[in-house]
Image 1: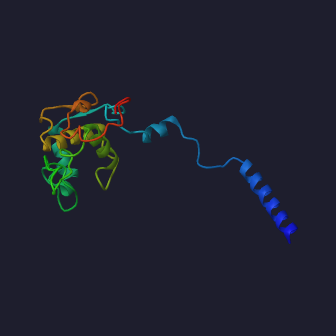
Image 2: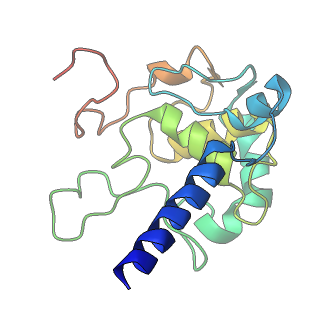
Length: 176
């Protein structure tokens, strides 16, 4: 019996070794163009922001068409979605309201989120200009930017968010 068990073990090891030596055949090669389409992350300092620009004036019409049903006319929230504005000064209270203006530390994160996830029913369909315009509009709802401010790859990283010091900075090398 012991000899039989040893043969089974040896045979199993040999079969596994043969299969392990063959390279797996997962997926397929990706072109630079295909990779660029999904490599769209935005760093807090603005690295990765695309060309384009937008203002509140540009964003209001887009917001009313694509966002108001879920987020309300001034970003206060609606039955379908969370508030984007309001909640300033509420984080240290029992009724903390985590909105873009009260909680988010970087304006670039807002651009990144809108571009990837909004509108809810059609994510990644907004142009860069539409995304900059909606970003400006949501920031304006919280009083963070003026309606005449132009948001683009240069100006957006310079926006000072009210809760920018409320998080540990894991992005800046050497920052502890």
